[in-house]
Image (cartoon, rainbow, N blue to C red; front, side):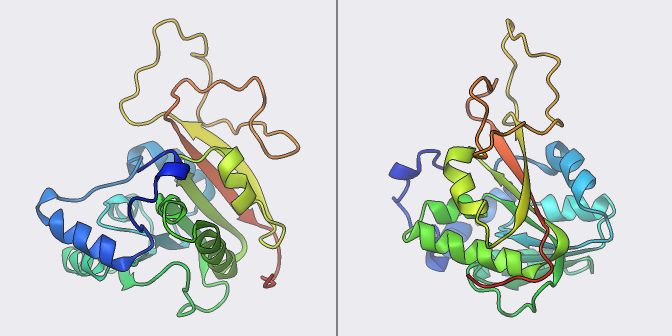
Length: 243
């Protein structure tokens, strides 16, 4: 996934045809998880999402994260993706796992689901894909509006992204969503800490103390410049109000 969104419009990542073609082309390559596997994300998932939650996994692709969550005790995960090819693959693969449901759907329009249908929504790279597509700000707003609408009060939207607060907060921290946001930062898989690192005691499980503007503190140093951010957006409102 491109990290520089000013130069990532080579493909229309919001187009089902692109993803259908990609999953057909990669059919023999096996499953693929963007950014992080469940083992690395498990401490955050278990902290914020009870196992009895009804979970919506947006942009599921052919990743194994939902399967891993079921193995870890999660009872109901609804997986949606814009690609009918990916959904067909995953339906066949998991037809014997009743905890997993798969539906072809565009995250910008999830009107199939009633308001406040889910306890939590997990997004691993889907918002990033839309930000690399055409009409990115509009697509992002449509998707996040749907996510907010579908979350129950007290529900959590967990966004795993390469986007730091300067590029993500303007989208996720809008008053209409009324989300209380915590931010974490974790290194990419396989990252080796520099030998001379002085931050050995820093815990990735501690939230980053953001500035009043919702940005990283001026003295915050990322050990891994290509690390990933986890935004925990907790819905505090009692009813979604369309803006």
